Length: 111
Length: 114
Image 1: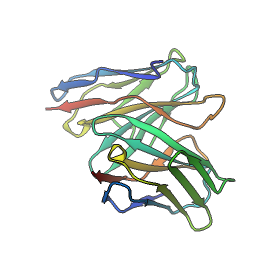
Image 2: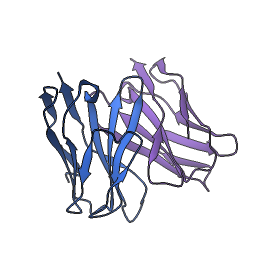
Image 3: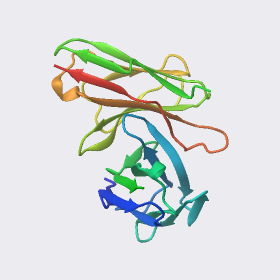
Image 4: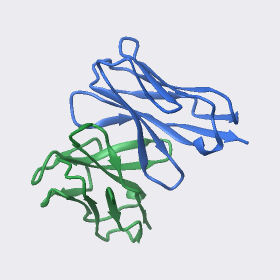
């Protein structure tokens, strides 16, 4: 069974810092990896999707990388802002239809 | 531009009562999913559907039933609610032509079983 781990569980940084969130998975036979954002009391919003054949994806201040062979992905957030405060979840899709989610990293960006 | 809509958003049930959660999507997506989210457990897949008239079990299907009679709707039923089913339930869909595996989530339905 695919296990997805996110480290750290919580992170607090001052505004303006660049930061990295980590995601690791146990089975490298994945179809894609997705990063989501979840605000308190809300649903998940897709941020980036990386296909298994890709190494990275970028959207604005966000950059996600994928190293399938080592079972790792990172989400890089440049010049963090208080509005980036949320929980960030990583999920991997194997051969089936379902995504396996990590438990998330709770990010707080302080002014 | 509604996306994925879940009703109701909040519900309180007594043990043994039944209820249905409704999920509707307006993106013509083929695939729909029901997840539950619990503190310390993350999101876990309950049931999913790969098209109208189809359903399949996910990781934690016991105590739930689903139906997909119309492509745009995916219903999650609890026949006899138990306190262990207290959770936040999320519906999601995927199957867009540009990014077929990108998931779109609803806002969630918070269920409390007393």
